[in-house]
Length: 393
Image (cartoon, rainbow, N blue to C red; front, side, top):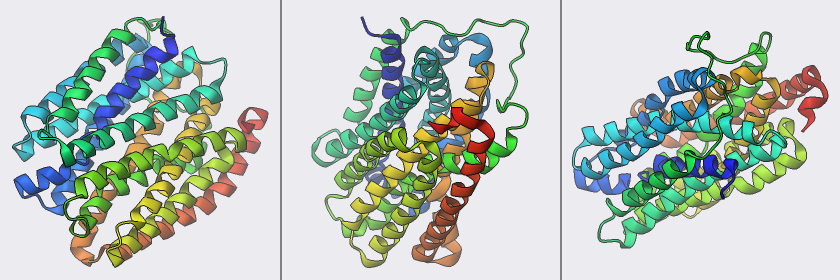
């Protein structure tokens, strides 16, 4: 019989697969619907807009009502979102709706599923944190890779990836039914927006956890949502495939970083996340400036490493400072900041309308990210002193 942890992690994988499966297909939608660069990045950015309200409410709701009763509707909605993308791909408005729903889904399932997995795997919290990050990133990479291959060689590139996702969702629904509930329903406690921060930890969250969280998706979103669009003219005939492979490279590059955080701890892992992100952004700017699309693969490795360092370090920080009754809420706050980073491609495209040059914008992001890395070295050390031995691993 599958273990409780496997049941929840597989469900996370199924939903995560659908979250990014459409990103390489944006290039096909661009050709068929005549979409602009700004519209493509907006399609990418509508995802975190749908995610925000779900993050605010799903964690606190699951802390009160229980994990299963909140996560199951999210898994169902994941399948509905793929159906919208499958049957509504001929209109931009339906693509926006599908991406918005996928954001809502992710906000529910990733937050509640992460908290639930931590509870069933509480005997080894660092290992469980790494497993959550590994499964989520594996799903983020598998979706784009399948879509990229389908886009290059399949006769139905806008059908097959979504059908695969629907099969995974059905398996996840079957498995999640057998996972044990870890929260006792509390009828006296109200469901309300709750950041989940224990008294006196707001500064820790703002100065350490939030910058770390931004690195989770702020860096790889440039590889998923911007670099393939900018470099499409330099990749005639293979742009969709390369976009999918880049997504795979980004996400699978997270695994060595996650393993390394297990050895060096989150206080070194968090600054390394932003350092890798700054270097990867610089390489992306060089690739665009020189029309050398091969350089983006090096950028993808660094951006994936940044994301792996940030996710594992950030979730460990959450585990260190949270109270058990507010774990879902604080996990939601972490993901809320993480997903703000997915607005990066839209931000760059919007600023480009005024600057009319992507290179200086990317250079500016690299500089700010490098400064953030330096900041985390000092701020993280102070956080470690305040939380003592618990925070050393």
